[in-house]
Image 1 (spheres, one colour):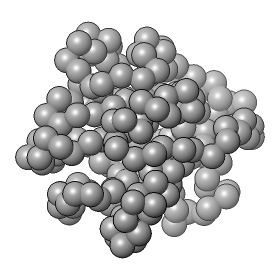
Image 2 (cartoon, one colour):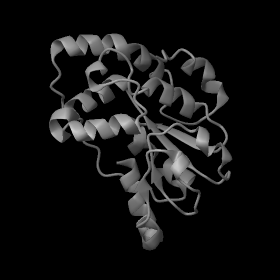
Image 3 (tube, one colour):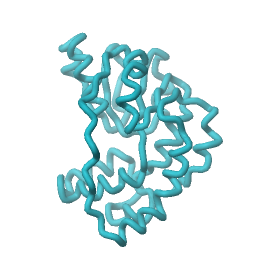
Length: 199
């Protein structure tokens, strides 16, 4: 949703450039262009060599809710989507392990992005995107206007999986809850995210 809203804003500025925006699984395969827009689930290290006028909006939220969404996606989108998503997320395991450990490396994503300082990174909690539209617009130089907020659809998760998911993801979400809703990535968050359980 964040990517789509930024893309719509870019279309108003330069439709030709916007037509080239895309998802990219590995930032090693991307190259800096300005203006340009990428969406990725990759880790940030590749961006260390990019110009300082690069801007990243990193969306984060509860890891357990995300795992439930992925579980539901198997029925909604099928195994091919799951396989591709696991590749995009640098998964360290399989769908069957989703509630056994943090196979999608969500804790690592959060730890690495919220402390990455080689280029400016604005970290925004998913549920706070609507509250920080002006901040995101100023940061990106694009008129960020997301669609109206909708309540998350409840997920049908078997009770035994909910219990297992809690053991895996509640410790991650306890750390996430200590982060501000919108902030610039900084070393000052290292103490907080240092408590993330990285599997």
